[in-house]
Length: 402
Image 1 (cartoon, helix red, strand yellow):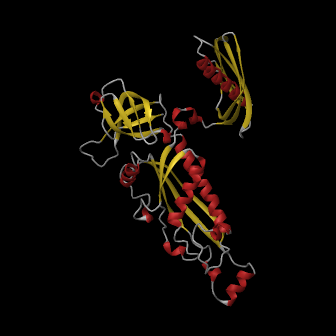
Image 2 (cartoon, rainbow, N blue to C red):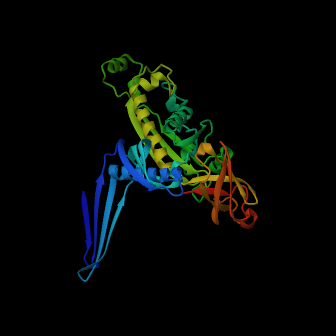
Image 3 (cartoon, one colour):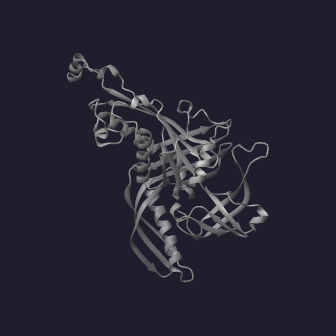
């Protein structure tokens, strides 16, 4: 595929040629080599592996940009750039050879096209997410099938879908509801579009994001189709009635540090409620899942789970500072979040103005970077170059990996 754009007035010619592999994952071989310096074989092996991965990525999916600059009809500058958005999910070393001070490595990598943001350091981090209950706007609609447990079962089903991906730490808070008045949700927010109870919950659970929502519709498309008369029963048996049921739910993802919305979307589904009207099924039972309606709702939940992943994937990784002692900084996240020794995070001061104590906390760059030294499952610590007191760093300030 080739795309050419020309701006004749500025005498600039831009040509972009893309060679892309398939979007699905596939195994690709790559070869790289590095010079062994000071008999440090491990460093050379790491460099050769990086070079081999780059070779495999360019074979799988590459973008070549050529930019030529012309002045008065004369070519004055020509640049060629090659890049790839591919990533390796698994890597196997096939062969390693050493000739003199040159180490040559051949690898095989399971490649797939990554999202643009996944080139950033934060892409590998497991962000902590709390999923709360989804209040039902019209509880009377749950009587048929006794699916009044939808508000707690739905977030649990979402949690299972997000956990299966493995890219986030997911906390269940399905018994907590963020909207005391579902009818106004999420319009019952403050002037700055944030939610104070989101901030409180996120702090309590130490979560970076809070997922919540409202179930707005669980109604039968035609309640008359479930009439008890002989005529109604005959129509049902002959398939002459509309036995569909509606599902409408709003999904919202909030930043736990500011309470501000990150994502909001409405999901809808319609399916046949082919269950006896007197049967007690519950929202997540086997009978519910096997019904036409349950299958349609399941597909909607799959989409909601994918939406949560997409909304959070490109966000930076943020964690709270729990303690500052001289040059030592302690964080509320550790190995389970993906932190490793040597990782670097930027530090920010969190503050509020005295004349607006309820406003969203504002961040101010502390102009300091900490390097993680010690990592434990749920916390970690590292050092900064300057005394924390000189930067006025305190508990509840934050560290960010972009």
